[in-house]
Image 1 (tube, rainbow, N blue to C red):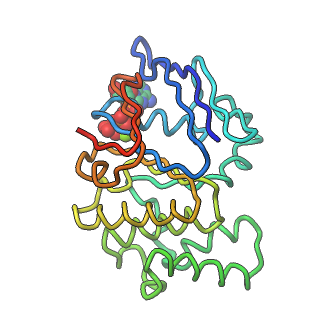
Image 2: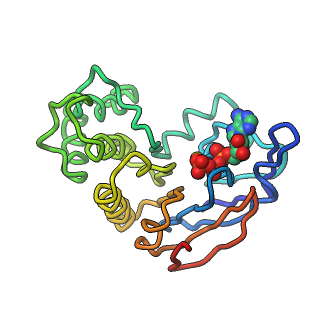
Image 3: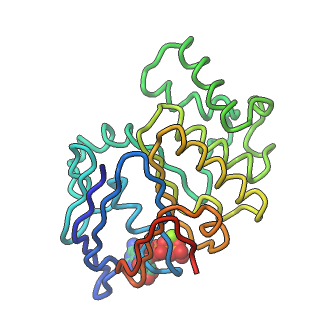
Length: 224
Ligand SMILES: Nc1ncnc2c1ncn2[C@@H]1O[C@H](COP(=O)(O)OP(=O)(O)OP(=O)(O)O)[C@@H](O)[C@H]1O
Ligand SMILES: [Mg+2]
């Protein structure tokens, strides 16, 4: 359960989040839409504990995310899988190593890491590319590697900011389908995007931001 209450944040005189409130239940798929500059990335940064707010709160499970102590940030992020527009893959590691790395730093044993990494690479359809380096991947494959990395530690929630921003329409559709499939397995998905066509084909809950305010919140919605 995510409870966002009255989030307010300004940069200088400009209010970037202005009284944002909503609740998201475990297992939901929520698209966050709005024009460029509406505040989507700022909101995502607050949800992942990367940005503090002026007022308001974000409660995710037992974490007070908008005011997270530095010592709690790592612990909280382990519960969340994060995917960005620029894939942020490590260039000198293979697909397998990029995904396995997340488990290595968490201290899992080699056998488990091997098994779990192959499992998620299968899920995102990248078993064959496991030994490719990022420069040897298409944009869609690179983004699916980033999704595999976000999923590998079995998070309760995936938060993706404009994950299809660098993809052509066909790859963007494929990525949206993948996120929907991940959601069907029970993972909560929060998907920020200004891609109207894509959000309209996803047809799940849509929260609309306009200049820092929530101006719409509809189930099974399209984005126009
Ligand atoms: N670090 C910052 N300092 C000052 N202003 C900022 C900063 N980060 C964001 N802003 C401003 O906050 C507003 C919201 O930005 P944000 O990145 O959240 O928008 P967005 O909805 O994600 O847009 P886009 O669709 O282009 O990614 C913008 O007007 C932006 O210029
Ligand atoms: Mg953004």
